[in-house]
Length: 191
Image 1 (cartoon, rainbow, N blue to C red):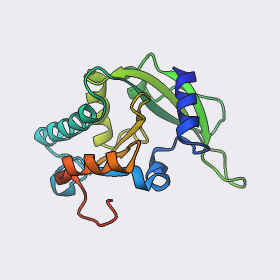
Image 2: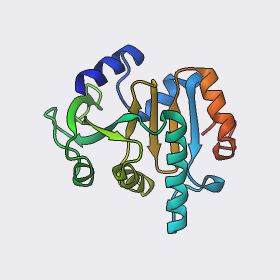
Image 3: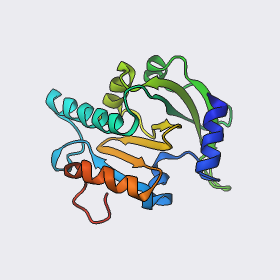
Image 4: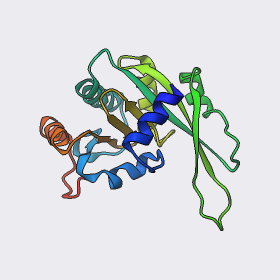
């Protein structure tokens, strides 16, 4: 898994660190953002809103990957040491078979050291772990999650308030935008 993910990332995202929040800037022509609740509401207050979030994420993932796809969930953990540490408790409990992938420095030369230690776990689209993960994301309890479909060459980044998707081409991005147009931002930039 680690080798396949490294090979994929290096061939499709040449030199770019696997930082979910930067992908939209680097791949703007293939990027689209969908909001997870009506009227761009950021956080759910009721169970019905959690169900809406899960429904939207599931619909997008099904459209992107199909039912039988095997996906890789990239889970970050943060520390002030270059030595990798396990994902935080909630993530490790959801994905106990996750494997260390890589570390990414998050500091400049003159700053205190700070690292993201990225782990990856293989999941299927209909796994309960994904729904549990999406609830954590919706509550802003975890962040910087990346879901990678290597075979489809698609990256899905759920965040509190929505999801960013990087597709293989501008045409595929436009098709997805048209299909789920009511979930798009009203802002011209797409945020």
